[in-house]
Image (tube, rainbow, N blue to C red):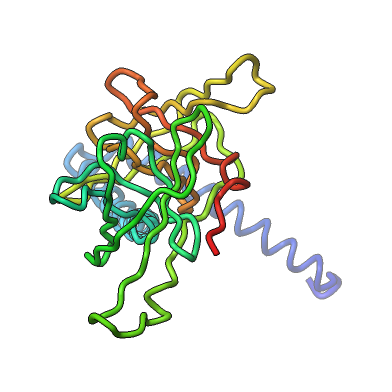
Length: 270
């Protein structure tokens, strides 16, 4: 032993430990084979309980992390829906309380985009904002040969003869998505007296002639009952990709008019 180096002593110690462990294992197996069944059953129960006590905290930690992630995603979607809803108005006939459809605020000066069918039967309209404020509006531009119409909201003074508060003349427009794709998660808000949320995926993109042309319709798995004329279709980040119009139909599920190309023709009212 005195002639061995430190490295050799360490290797010898490891070897002795290995042989001892091997011998202990062999003896343990032999004793287990000869032990009564009651003792073997007790040992197995102790081993199982020890494993469960070690594994349970780890499984609980994984479950807690998954639940936290689910809550985080849910909160994000709720925030997105709330943000988009601030740019959605209810359009009604000025002479009654009947809601004709929904519209999207698309400019800070109060331009609203909606389906032509929403306003086809009435001459005067009122936009009801998310906070309940009602503003008169009128048509400023229609899409040639299409389904879309632009209206302008007019802010009102707090009392007759008073000046209009500048803050009341600035509106929150929606953000348009630059693209969308098949299988993408999509949301829609609607409702006249109560707010409703439709959820689904984009399951069809229809083009006029070939896949290289601009899409003319976006099919979804969102139930038709969860949408209304003028309902916006948007992604989980709050970017709007389409609008529900009367001329688009997809059975029991909703189809939407793609709005990407309309960004360039939003009217500017001086």
